[in-house]
Image 1 (cartoon, rainbow, N blue to C red):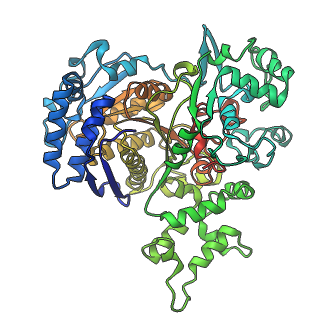
Image 2 (tube, rainbow, N blue to C red; image 1 turned 180 degrees about the vertical axis):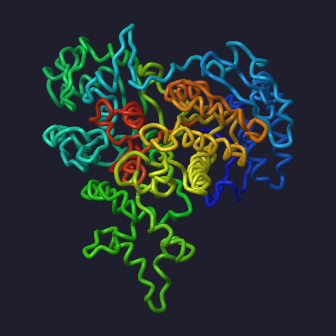
Image 3 (spheres, helix red, strand yellow; image 1 turned 30 degrees about the horizontal axis):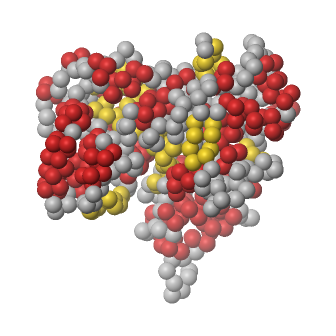
Length: 608
């Protein structure tokens, strides 16, 4: 990511409606020369947002100096930047996208141009990116030379690109420790114990040494069809490779039959013939940039200590099974576990002449500490956002592509789980009358406030990394969606997104949202509130594949992001990607596809 200014920003996430930031900007002497050399005038948009937000004493002079020099040096790029600024209120139509008015508070909605009135044809880079991206397909198809193979249902998990990525990083292939079994997974309620025992669980991930030691810094990691074949041959033999490519028909995980074998001779017939290449040195830099943003109930020191316990290989299964149990209950057990003992120690107020331990771990008051420990891991997970720059190995139709110049900011965050066992029952009881099938009094507002806090954390992470064109897909509206008040829950999620974007300026130019199955709900919310919502950026609804759109935007020089609707086990226990390594069918969803086709595993416990 490029920002022609050094800055420091501290963010208080305590309130979704009030965003405070303290910062300072220091002009770099060679900024103008750098912008000229790298042709980065698009970054002026971020600079302007930063100056307006931070308000350094000399902001006017800095702004005038940069803009006047940009106009002189490269008038074409300057004109392009002018057309893309949020203040321009420009929108573009597309066959599979719909844009909505974007105007700042105080502007009259009638001043905004209608959606169909602005079109720059094929020369507009944003319109090109949207049109070039393929539509989303829930079977995650790889389309090559007219043939389509579902990564969720047909392509065996041993052929996944992320296995090659880990091998290139130096993962210890001798490690056979299973940190979590498939037992207890929501998919298998109707299966017998005998069937479940055949399902592979989550394996531990450990590197043999440093990610990029002195002798490995120059090594280039290659992701290609040839590398996949080498990997499978090396681990499983030639016969296994041939079997997986030509003859494999059984769902090993489910005991069902696929309609046919793949019938291909080489992995290139699935993922294409292109190569993705990146240096270990670059990957090490990306790993160092990983940051975790937490809400008010999770002070940094407390969160890190908690995660250090629950993400330990030997503890993953234990705490996953207790993810719906309030932390206080773990401490009150007659034989408390490691996390229970930690909480119990913090509860002890009888420590003479010493600072209370809860204060040492970042809590501002004992009441705040009590508020945190009355929640479970699942409840607290909605206050966590894991952010790391990364790259997708694939572009449109899951075909391997060359690495673009700009990375994508990967963000993993969780919605509220209303549909999985004990954690769902706990969440449902907060907001709904089970017998009346409706929201409790005031519960809809508290539910929305919680979602707004989650999205504020997501957008704060984007702002921190300088993202100007974030993308997002519907969060909490898939397997987490409740049967009670389903349509209203969809509306609340979108009200939360739209209200946060109206209430706070994160420096975005255009926000791309794929509401998926909730598209009618999203459009209705926008229509019902068209006189109320005054967005700080342009808003575009679309039906494109999130990976493909983010890749297209990054390849065109935009600073973009990809939102991975995640799970408690990922953001609280370090298992980013969840079932990516072995999941098939319903165990290969958005999170698994995200991790299996990108550098996202850099943020996984055992690597990060």
